[in-house]
Image 1 (cartoon, rainbow, N blue to C red):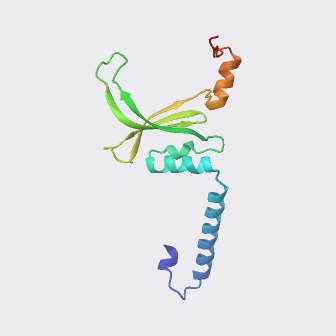
Image 2: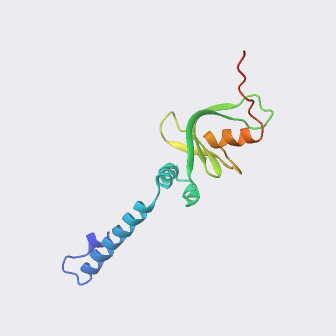
Length: 141
């Protein structure tokens, strides 16, 4: 905006142009340095506008994303819960659940919970097997 407002013959215009170019170069470097997972997390969090960008961190990755129905109850014994269409994100250390607004793609966060340890896929199967939690497959003879 400063550049647009500066007269073309202003003595500081060249410095403002150089500063603008430097800012664009730095922004491009930062964007290029983000991993795919960090970029995905940014694109998930940025439109939520609830101060959730503080969740961006090099150690935090999107492990899994999913759509589901989510029950919102006023208490544990509440028999009349509201079921909402939701989008969930399992991050490396927390779970983020978002409610779809009016059936649109717009999301509003409804739950952010810490996850102490999360195992998914082959890692989960290996862990369960090592603890004897998976019964061996026995074929009838």
